[in-house]
View 1 (cartoon, each protein chain N blue to C red):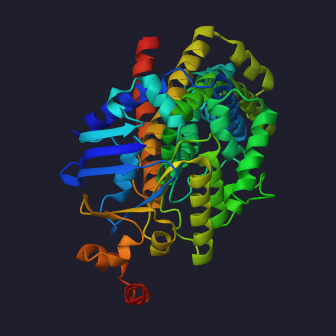
View 2: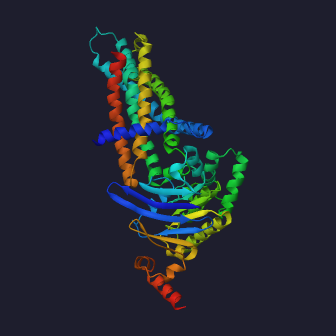
View 3: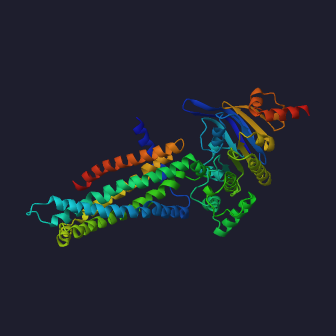
Length: 246
Length: 253
């Protein structure tokens, strides 16, 4: 019963979020601030993880291909497909759900318990629109770039791993990357990233905005927000894959 | 003029406000007092529109909030200033940006005009050389001053303060009280303050309303409060030995 209530409250929240901003200039300032906070400041972690995961995928594929009949360009092909199909969109977004989701819930939750949201409402400002819409725009527009970066660095990481470990030839790896390239798979990954970005911005905002109590409750809300965001991302990943690839 | 008639407010099974009538006049500082849980904060938040009353009317300058259009309500919000118990300053903004925030949202002033106004109100609340500091770098008293400056920067007709002295030392409390009263007189604002602080009651209470269990138990001035024989008021206001002695001296004189 509580889940249905929460879904209802989340939907009502979105209705308030999608209103015309009261002051365009302030709104765009907020959007650019959020792009910096939620997007640009995540580039480092995304780059680091993508590069090394790409390397690990390539090494593991190479180690599991002992049969000489199987062509070695399969290593590059498998790394490319893993990076494009799942890692860059789903895995990176799960990481961002943890990093950015907890930040969003705790910052909005702290504003709630310290009455800063009440202060906005007293001034006549639609606090949901002011606080959440810039986050949605920032993530929805910026995260696809992070996904592209993750794809590139993951595949690059695999190539570097080949040179560093000598398990496969860089030429075979590059041939594998070029093999059977389907642009639609990149589009599929980007579509998923837009949906996941929306979830990362809105679910933690919901948990932060409706928090009651003090710092302990804000902490609990952050944990809940991260867990639920990941759960919903994993579910939507299943349905999106079914819809877009089958 | 702010008039409240028969305000009721419940949260689930808990009935918090049980039919409160009150009038708050311009240029006067009205204090709402009462024990914790008596409904003071809910009453103040209901006046501000943060809670919607279950029953009763709230009229600003003769017009009930129920009869206002969305645009009129938006306009009214700009006539309201609020000083929250914990100041509620925006952590990520400097003092200057906090005070400028309502101007940026609701006026079309140029940046230099806004800065002039911000400087003026910060001087008015006796806060100098703090424009570029963040709230976390200020003392409690300074944060309250910034909150007052932010509340009055748009020249509101109504000023609401929730426990403006909580967490402040007695000397700073008196400074904040006097500042609120001066601003009320100077700009003829209708000021409503929630407080537990009996010093404030004696110092600036031009009109005092005592709430008990969601009902208006007593109403009067700071002089009346010395003479009242209402048991609930006496036991609340004169709970400390110091105030008992003050009352005794007053009554003997």
